[in-house]
Amino acid sequence: MPVYNNFMAKRSKLKAAMKIAIVILKSRVDGVTLGLLLSYLFWGSLLLQCGDVEQNPGPTDNMRQTRLTSGSRAATTERAVGSQGTPPNAATPTKQPTLSDVMATLQSMNNSMTRMSSKLDDVSGDVGLMREQFAELQGEMKGLREEVSDLRLENDDLKRSNCDMKKQIDELERKTDDLEGRSKRNNLIFYGLPRQEKETNVECEAMLKDLITDKLELADDIVFDRAHRLNSKPNSPVIARCVFFKDKVKILKAKRKLQGSQIFIGEDFSERVREIRRRLTPHLKVKRNEGCRVSIVFDHLLVDGKRYSVDNGNNLTEIK
Image 1 (spheres, rainbow, N blue to C red):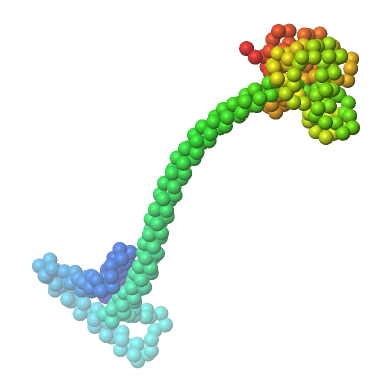
Image 2 (image 1 turned 120 degrees about the vertical axis):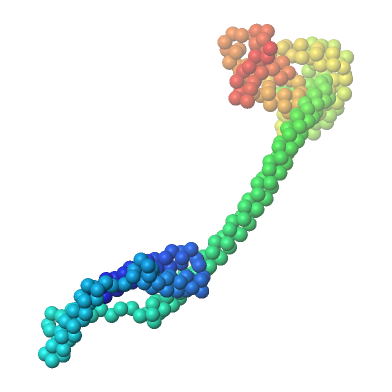
C-alpha cells in the first residue's frame, strides 16, 4: 500500500505538470523554454516528495517493525508462488514510469508544441496579410470617398452652370421671338386665293390690290413692299408685307366683309406664337358655342374682356 500511494502521488503530480505544460503551450512558449520548465517541475516534484528533514524525521520503531514483518511475509509468499506457480487471483504489479518515459513524453509534447507553434505562426502571418489588405482597402475607400466628394462638387457646379445657361437660353429665345415678331409685324397672310397659271409675284400683288378695292372696299393707296406665295402647292397662302403698319390695321378691320367667302386674312406670327394660337383654337370654339364674346389676340385668348393662356396640360389659365 505505501508503494501504491507513492505511485499515485507521483502520477497526480505528473498530470499537474502536463496541465501546466498545456497552459504554457497555449501561451505560445517556445519548445526549449517549455522543456526547461517541465524539467524543473519534474525534479521539483521529486524533491517535494522527500519533504523536509525536520518535518519528516523518518519511520518510528513500530513502523520499522511493521515493514520488516510485511517484508518477511512478502518473501515467504514469493517463495511459495515460486514453488507452486502464480496464484490465479494475484494482482499484477504496476510498472512505475521511469525518467526515460517522462523524457520521451516531454519530447513528444515539445514536438507537438513546435508543430502548433508553426501553425500559429502561419495563422499569424495570414492575419497580418489580411490586416495589410484591409488597410489597403481602407486607403482605397478613402480615396474613393474623396473622388466622390470632388464629383459631387463638380456636379453641383455643373447644375448651377446648367441653370444659368438655361436662363440665358430662355432669355435668348424670348429676344429672338420678339425680334422675329417685330420683323413680321407688318405681314399679312391671305388664304383661299386662286392661283393663276405661271403666276408671278407682280401678278400676285395685283390680285391682292383687286381684293382690297373690290371685296374690302378700301382705297387703292395701300402699298405692299412685297407679296408672294408661301410654297408651290396649288392655292397656297399668299404672304404680303405692308409698307405702313396702319395699312395692315385697315385691312384687318375690313376683313369681316369677307364672311361667307373662301378667303381669310390672318397675321404672320413666330413659330412659338403660332403653336400657342393652335392650342387656343379648340378653346375658342368651345367659348363661342357657349355664347361668349371671344377672340384670339396675339398669343392669348380674350373671353368677355378677360385674357387667358394655356399651360403645359393645354388648360386655360387666366392672365392677371
